[in-house]
Amino acid sequence: MIINGSLTIVNFYFGAFLPEITDSLFSTQGIMVMLLVAYGGAMWMFLTSAPKVYTVMVSDMNIAKDFYEGLLDLPIADIPLHYYYNYEQSLGATSFDPIYMGSGFNDTMIKPNDGLWYQLKKNTQLHIIGGANLGYKDCQRHVCFDRQCLDTLLLRVQSRRLRYKIRTENPLNFLVKDYDNRVIEMAEVNN
Image 1 (tube, rainbow, N blue to C red):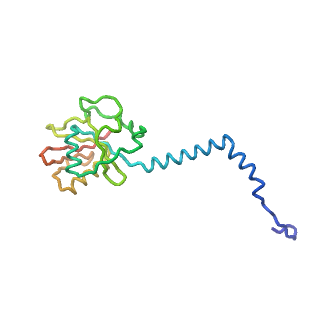
Image 2: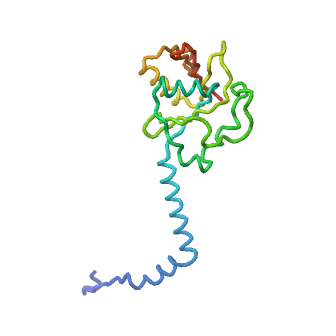
Image 3: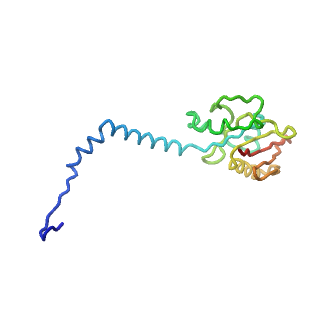
């Protein structure tokens, strides 16, 4: 740097500020901030790596098992870790319409090991639980609150060349026949 025609060398010593930085960094408040940042980063990594989970309520678990494992050939999946910590389990649980609930439904929280778990896509799982009423003419009813889930299941049905009939597009509702000639109604629930 040139000041008044003469060359002056300005030395910036980082070491002069080092004691102040380390004192504030390793103070109680500094350590708490570092711990909170580390915890936030760990939670972000945990939740972003967790698979997306779709839940389908069915009227008969045994028929559902035959349908998803046999007809759709979905691989069985492990229960995602975030379900053990109650994450996403109560979302929408109080907003179920009683028309879709079976007579045995109670207000208890669904436990992670209840139901069936399948791998739907690479980072997407399907959780099958009981609780839906039988549909029209006593057909098996599978209800879901998520359109993407039913779109994916419909693609799977089409790729397996199963007999199906789309009843309505919005909300999505379609019928599928299984190998025992049972009709399974796949219905999207709109709130």
